[in-house]
Image (tube, rainbow, N blue to C red; front, top):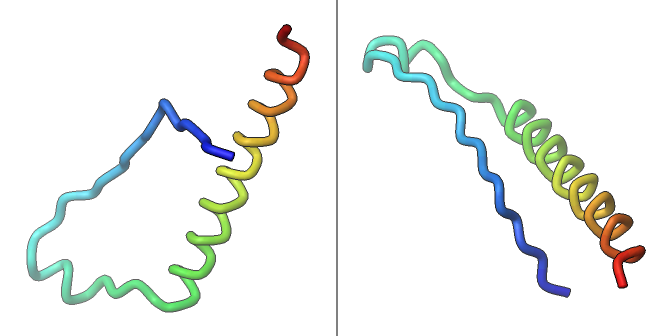
Length: 56
């Protein structure tokens, strides 16, 4: 089933190269971010499906 996502929010943080060496993203942080992103996408899809089923 094709899914269309119309809204995309991108948050960025600009920093100097010195700060980039200090701030490393751990594997656990990446896993947690993936889980949060997947959960949010699933929530949006189910909400859209529920709204669309009543429209005739």
